[in-house]
Structures are given as structure tokens and as C-alpha cells.
Amino acid sequence: MKSIIVVGAQWGDEGKGKIVDIYSEFADTIVRPTGGNNAGHTLVVKGEKFVFHLIPSGILHAGKKCVVSNGVVVDPKVLLMEIGRLKERGYLKDDGQLKVGLLANIIFPYHISLDKAREEKLGNRKIGTTARGIGPCYEDKIARVGIRACDLVRPKALEEALRANLDMKNFLLEKYYGAEGVPFQATYDEYLAYGERLKPYLIDTSLFINEEIQRGAKILFEGAQGTLLDIDHGTYPFVTSSNTTAGGACTGSGVSPTKIRGVIGVSKAYATRVGGGPFPTELLDEEGQAIRDRGNEYGSTTGRPRRCGWFDAPVVRYAHRLNGLAGVALTKLDVLSGLARLKVCVAYEIDGVRREEVPLSLAEFEAARPVYEQVEGWKEDVSSAREFGDLPKAAQRYVRMLEEVTGVEISVVSVGADRNQTIIRKNPFRA
Ligand code: GDP
Ligand code: IMO
Ligand code: MG
Image 1 (cartoon, protein in one colour):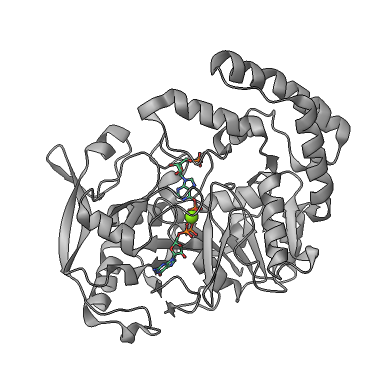
Image 2 (cartoon, rainbow, N blue to C red):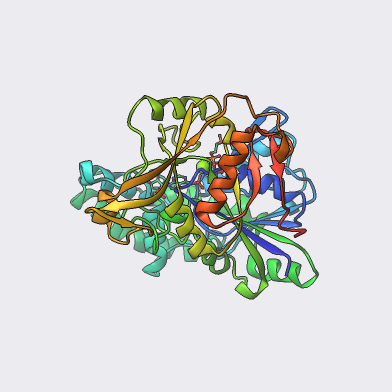
């Protein structure tokens, strides 16, 4: 058992891409098990920036296999664009490096139109989705009417499934939402062409990954979104439509939990969230703006400003409970440099009662007031620290305090966006 799952421990955008890129050096195969191009995973290598929406963040490591597995909802246009951009930049020279699941559900234009139309109708109760068609595509999968990658290379199957879907989707779009419908012929031709271009990558990814495991390969699963966005355990309905927690990596890729060695959670040294939903430690003042500015907290997928707030320990403890974290990779510690004092939420107060756990009801979560502990900040720039001992004493104390209040060891401290701006205290592939 040599395989590791990386998950987001907060509301997404924790820096999973950077951490996966670093761990990729020690893995053989990197797998995206869930989500779609709602994800935006950023890596910076020697000052050069890459943002991946579907392709695993290990792809820059030549010779490592990367898998987009069956649990991912794939927008073929976006995937092909990513493939093209990588090739332009001199990567993915060998097409055999990338594998895409034959059973992955495909995002069609009507999913995107429905996502947008539904959000518009919700008005100020909208979820704040990424408008990439993720929810409607997962709905079709669960309703057993989805069109999968294997159908794109079978013209007759595609025609039948697309006609049946459009019949219903166009009714919904035109009659219920008053939006534009999606034409059959143009969509059919477009998707058949995508199928042709994707054909070289399409395989039985569960078989491939399990054969890799059999021959002793180390698999790295790259979770998308974050624990609090999980469809079952997150701040429903302000969540995404997949299981973002560790179990989702197994079901999404067709790999048994018995093959997993451990799970690493990624968390920022503070908290952010994009879209609607409860966020108890949110800072709506100039301190929040200062964190947004220093941390460049604007979405990698949609460019939306991210909501910013203090570190929320009950949230990370919850992530620990749901994922069984062997360690936390703490990112963006550098962003906190220069703040005179920092606050850490250690519990909530709801209706005058102190609560240690994340509340399950949305109303309670929305009413939760953070109980803060204040800690001293540090002035020094920490971005060139490479050992824990290089950090100012106050920064070391902050990291240790986060370990105490979450109950999880902090195994990586990230002090900048670049691959090398990282302090690795423990390597999960070696531990
Ligand atoms: P992901 O979705 O979890 O992969 O995270 P995103 O890529 O959406 O957002 C994280 C952002 O923080 C990206 O712009 C990263 O380049 C950047 N980042 C990651 N780690 C650090 C860090 O330690 N310090 C700073 N300043 N930026 C970081
Ligand atoms: P990565 O992998 C942050 C959020 C959206 C919205 C909700 C539902 O980069 O961390 P959806 O389009 O999935 O139906 O939107 O989930 N969301 C993310 N927030 N990071 C992500 O991915 C996200 N993927 C979805 O903002 O609130
Ligand atoms: Mg992101």
C-alpha cells in the first residue's frame, strides 16, 4: 500500500495543485478522481504559471502517468484545450502519458445552459456555481441518462442518447427557463469530432490504475474542491455535486480503500471561500481585503474575488474526521507576514452556547459566531524559508498552535506559490 489521497480541507482553492505537483516527484501515477473543470489547480515552476482544470497536476513531470478517471465530469472542449496548451509549452510529448476514463460522464452545452439558467432563477439565493455545467451533468449521471466518453466514439449510441436528452433539456431550457435551446446537429457533429480526438486517451482507467498498483506503483490521487463542498457532508446546498472527501477518490477511480496508505489534507494558513454559503470567520473589513490583496485571492477558474477570513479550526477538525488525515499541508503562510496579530477560530458560539463541532444545519452554521484565540504575528518575509527552523519564532508558534487546535500534524508548510517555496517536514510516500 503506497497510495496517497490529497484532499482540500476547507472550501477549495487550498493549494492542492501545488502540493500534488510536489508529491508527484515521489509517485508514479497521478489520478483526478472527481469533479470537473469547476476546479482550477495552479502550479508555479521556476516562475512559470500553469492552471489545470481537468488534467492532473503531475503532468509536468515527464514519465509520470496522469489519469482523468471515471468519476470526473469531462468537458471535452476544455480537456482538448488543456492538452493543446500543454503541448504548445513543450509538455505531454508522449500521448501515452495521459489516460481518460471511458466511463467518465461528458458535459454538454445544455448542462452549462441549465447551470446558468438555474442560478439566474435563484436570484439572491443562488449557489454561486462556476457555471461550468457540473451540477446538471452529475444529475444526469445519477438519473442514469448521462452520456459517457465511450458514447462519443459510438456514433449511433451518441445520436440516440443526445436526441433523448435534448428532447427533455430543450423543453426545460425553453419552456421553463425561457432560455435558448441547444441544436441537435451542430452538437452531435461537434461531440463526435471531440470523440475522435480523445480516442487515443480513452481506456479502462480502473483496470489501468489497479494494474499499476499490482506492479508496485505509487498512486497519487488529486482531490478537487474541498471537504466543506462535499455533496453529503458540506454546507448543503452551497456545495458542489460530488464527493470531494477521501472516499470519493476510491469510488471515482475504481480503487479499493484497502489500497490506500493515507490521506493528506491541504489547508491555507487562513480561510477562503468562493460562491455563497456560511463562512463564520469571514472578514468583511479592510483586514479581509488585505489578505485578499496579499494572497491574490481571486478564483483560478472564474476570476471571482474569494471571500477571506481567519483560520477555522472546527472546519479542519471536521475535515480530519471525514478524511482521516495523516497530515496537513499548510499553504500561504507567507501571506500572513506583517499582520500584527492573528486570530484563530477554535470553536463557535451558536445561540449563546459554545460548540466545538461544525453544525449540521445550515441555519446554525449561518448563525455561528467564531470564538477566537489571538496570537502574535510576525513581520519578516518568510518566502525564502526552506526549513522549519528558518521561520520566525512567532510563525513557528502559529504553525504549532494550528497543530494543537486541529489535532493534525502539519507535514508541509508552503511559503510561496513556487514549487521550491516549500518546507517538507514529512513525506507521506516515505513516512
Ligand atoms: P487549488 O484549487 O487547491 O489547487 O488552489 P488554487 O490553485 O485554486 O489556489 C491557490 C493559489 O495560491 C494559487 O494561485 C497558487 O499559486 C497559490 N499558492 C499556493 N501555495 C502558496 C503559498 O504558499 N503562498 C502563496 N503566496 N501562494 C500560494
Ligand atoms: P478547486 O479544485 C473553490 C464552488 C463554487 C460554488 C460551489 C458549486 O480549484 O479547489 P459548482 O460549479 O461545482 O457547481 O459550484 O462550489 N467550487 C469551488 N470553490 N474551489 C473549487 O475547486 C471549486 N469548485 C467548485 O464556487 O460555491
Ligand atoms: Mg482552485
